[in-house]
Length: 149
Image (cartoon, one colour):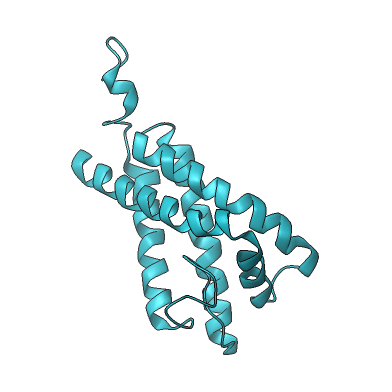
């Protein structure tokens, strides 16, 4: 089980780091993607676009390093739940927008569809698995003599 949680941590952590990079470098594109969902007041999109990618980056790094894995998994699970809810909403009402998950809408691979729902649902479950099952093994703390498990 410990190897499975490590693999899950590396997957979700790496994915969150990867997803954050483009958003950090192109916050205006990300703000536009947020506005496309029509779920937040437009005035909030810039604030969310400037803060959310840094939260994603931090949670991803912490998961990979095994630092505060449960709080980090709580963040990733919560964010994935919100993202999944937003995708379900957009898919249900038939909005023809790009998900904005990994890049700007101008360079992304496609519109919100069943693939996105299955992908984010699966990632949500993997992150929930980390939250419920991770015991803190394989962390950077285990490299410190006397602090490891």
